[in-house]
Image 1 (tube, each protein chain N blue to C red):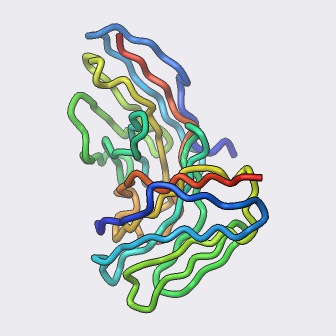
Image 2: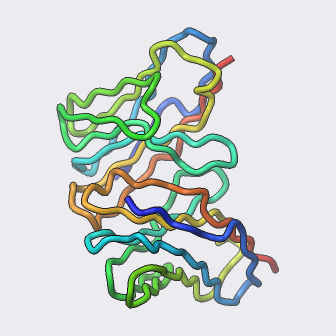
Length: 110
Length: 114
């Protein structure tokens, strides 16, 4: 599975868009990009995933570059409840072998 | 649906004791797995299963055993607990083996070995 690189921490003002970057330069053609988040010590929560195209759901948008070597998770209107650690994960033909890194700690402030 | 259910939520063990962390899912998922998370760290994969009767090792399998006799249950056994196994344990499940499926996590089991 490809490795990912994320910034250790980021801040975002409440109500503003939070843009979380992720580099996955060794991603292969059949590997998906997943985003999960973990609030305090709760179980990780699925946010979104994509293969090539940009994706949007009720929680967030995922922008994947054309060469697929990086992506950005966008929380359009961050709230205090979005404060969490966000994990970018790349996984191929076995979804159960999700390999987590240390993620980005997002702090949303009033 | 209850989703992924883990028991117990908290447990204190003495070094050398054995115990089993239970995990059950009611979503008819083929894939189940166990992760551990140490303070300030990401999740590390211990063992996983692609279906009943099939298990395999993850990144950190030593000191843990698993079995998958039914689709619903995937217990994690600590045969002889060590202080290094103090951690938070998460069970997860997903629908199938094909990439692109969502993985659902339980709420975690906090284990302390003294």
